[in-house]
Amino acid sequence: MRDFAQDHRWLSINTATVRKQRGQDWPLPHILDACAARGIRAISPWRDQVAAAGLDAVARQVKALNLELSGYCRGGMFTYAAAASRQAVRDDNRRALDEACALNAACLVLVVGGLPGALDGKPAHRDIGAARAQVTEGIAALLEDARARAMPLAIEPLHPMQAAERACINTLEHALDLCDQLDPARSGALGVAVDLYHVWWDPKLAQQIARAGRERLLAFHVCDWLTPTRDLLNDRGMMGDGVIQIRQARGWVEAAGYAGFSEVEIFSEHWWSRPGDEVLDTCIARHRGVV
Amino acid sequence: MRDFAQDHRWLSINTATVRKQRGQDWPLPHILDACAARGIRAISPWRDQVAAAGLDAVARQVKALNLELSGYCRGGMFTYAAAASRQAVRDDNRRALDEACALNAACLVLVVGGLPGALDGKPAHRDIGAARAQVTEGIAALLEDARARAMPLAIEPLHPMQAAERACINTLEHALDLCDQLDPARSGALGVAVDLYHVWWDPKLAQQIARAGRERLLAFHVCDWLTPTRDLLNDRGMMGDGVIQIRQARGWVEAAGYAGFSEVEIFSEHWWSRPGDEVLDTCIARHRGVV
Image 1 (cartoon, chains in turn yellow, cyan):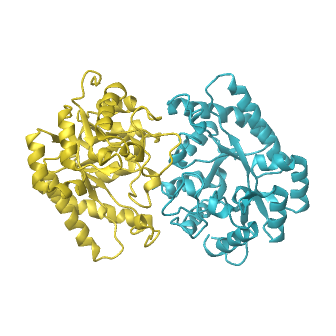
Image 2 (tube, helix red, strand yellow; image 1 turned 60 degrees about the vertical axis):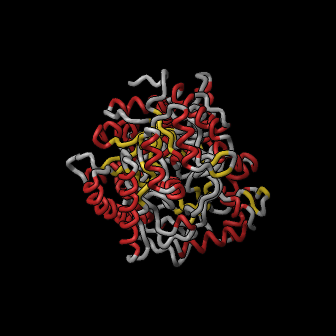
Image 3 (tube, chains in turn orange, purple; image 1 turned 180 degrees about the vertical axis):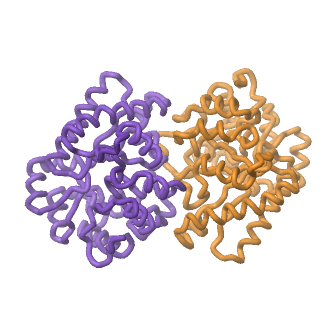
């Protein structure tokens, strides 16, 4: 297992973690400068942050700062109520792939979508089985585009508490079943993003990480589960402040062959209220001490 | 599949649903009278409510009103930090069994416990594997007491968002694995409580309900999952107000051999703020129209 205590060469910052500082938007170019100034070698930015700064400008800055992208957030949202939306979903995901390529990302992370409309509080129906069928179909179609661009797709199972609104793939086992169905050759074009926040509770976690193996383990995200958790979306904890056995899980993914970055992804009103520099320094310290 | 539209003979009220009305405690004797007055034939009371009214008095009232108990809430909380607590946990669960017997309950529902101390915001450790080992040991020991009293134990898998604080058994599959380990003969002494709020999201739900079968399906609880859900504990929805395919799931449990009550268990600040009579009438209407 790699020793993270000596340096933070394997730390990546998901830029949602510092999308705000002191409660105000922190523009992506500033985030990237602040990361590079600390010797952070990798990031994982969100599409809206990239769009706000301009794709070309971000691509130039990433290159100038010698940053890598441990992933690009995010594609997916494959479910729809009206058949007419299907093509729009695919087109949008193709654009996400193109952006991921322009930024030389390691993979495009997929948040697959839940019941259509549920995110706006108006679910069009209750048929989660139908939503899952649309997800399967959507990934199958996008996989062709992804292969053509040599950009791997990483299915991220989200916590079951987000099944209705954000993602109806909620366990690593389910995500890997989908991988086996759509990419039985384990080509590397399709895999998973293991975000411990979403899967830490799963009694089959170790088993499914081993099943995933090197070809399927495309990203590894860390934060922590707080007790109590006060919000279903924006109350994630800093590594070490909660109950997830992070180092144990890192041992599992490394034993399975993963040798990439450990990406900090924290959605937290608390951390968004703090100075961005403080948050990044804390991420580094916890990466060394806890992850 | 049974027709629930014509009457509500298979409705049971988990009394937590109306533990408060208009924001004030509603005493259990009043709840029981209000249920009986509506032709509700079954309830599932909580230990603290029974204790407040007195076990003997409640037992007499239940008998006088000809009420059945679809379950008794609850035993469990098997995890502990100090070894000295182990005997206290077992003793308390034996008392719960005795109360369940005095009330002639169909089963004792088990909420198995999470990380010790986490419910108070002070987890003693992060080792969910160790917590699960204590749960297995605790159920194994209690099972002897339960067999001696002919009182079935129903393991209730809780939603993964409650893994740290309330129950580290979070899927029906995990609960049934435990049943197979501790009661391989499928004697009827150990089974599961299927609460749709906790398991609706699971892609293996239908498969695991079929696996459970008649001998293991000891209770069936319903409410609904709201979008958005604003609280991890007390924002459950009334049947029909959320996204759970309740009737489909009832079809699965009945196909697997379950022929007992459909128990409404709603923890909701909203419904606790309403008049208790209104809540009970709504439960009856939704039981007929939605469940």
